[in-house]
Image (cartoon, rainbow, N blue to C red; front, side, top):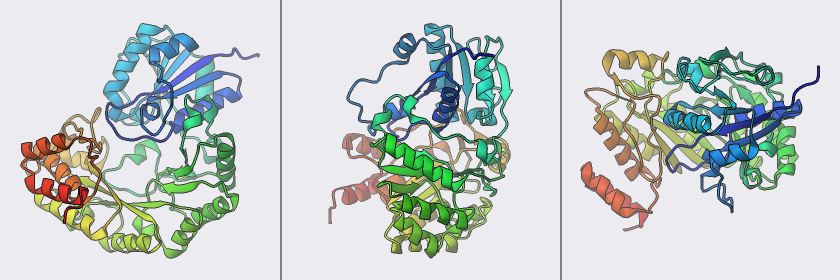
Length: 454
């Protein structure tokens, strides 16, 4: 039977903040590529990338209604992340007001909150899970549904994870950062992580050779790419395999630098770091989580402080940029224990830091803990408080001994005193917030470092 060629518009919303995004949505460009291979016409519009300063697109980014009227799609698909919940709600209404096209919602949100949008009169399909093996049949048989039809997509095998197709993405010729997954899934059981619901515990390892060919092809087609980002859930779970990737990437000589979103401290060694440096690796970001021993042990990372301290020293000696991620407000955390996290951050001396706010995802051990010992707020449209322009919303959870306001104070204090994350674009705003939350001493530390006052 001859296929009916359809036009599909995939959209990724943007948060109303200033967090820099130098990448185009990986999942949408993978799914779009699958559909293009079968003769369909696809456009991907990632507003998080397009609205970021990284894109440097010399013409105005078109609005969603203008895009819809210009492209006239048969199907519109929106990617849903939980922190973009409100933005997705608004976008669903915009789509409904602009077109009668079939509307699909998918993304990691529905692995955690499968019932959301189930009563929307505008949504036709809700897809939970990884849609590589589902999207073609769904698109080709798509029809209007009220209420939405819920589709549970099974996780594809490693060989079924298709390459990214950037050609279909708006603004692709301005993309500086190409992201790729060498594997999906993570076998570890950190208490705050919901990977068991999203990517799964089983690690699905893609062919290293095909991944390197994909990178080489992407760079040849898109000269603007200057960095390759590895975004695996746990990239070094098989160190020998990761070393093999580094060797092949080095031999490919793309001219690109290499970065990795996250690495476990206990899986780093001098051999791996040496290969990483040779491959033009730039940074290593270690998940530290907390500087308090009791809080740290409750996270169940399977690492020790000694692992982290040794790994940080190895990264330093290798000449790489060191990053650390901490989580404010984990079970058992409080303002006094947060001081220990700040002390550890000073000891590790990272080049950059992320002070994330604890988010109690459903079906995680920390969610059970907060249900019993604390309060859970909005986990559908939260802010992890990482915006460099000091924009933030209420934390998604709190306790009597670590209140909402205390968590905001902890975030401000940590960022002001431990690194240069906040941009110096609005000193009046910095001063106002410091006065509001009685952080004059933190302001003095910030000003001394920012302006290098002796």
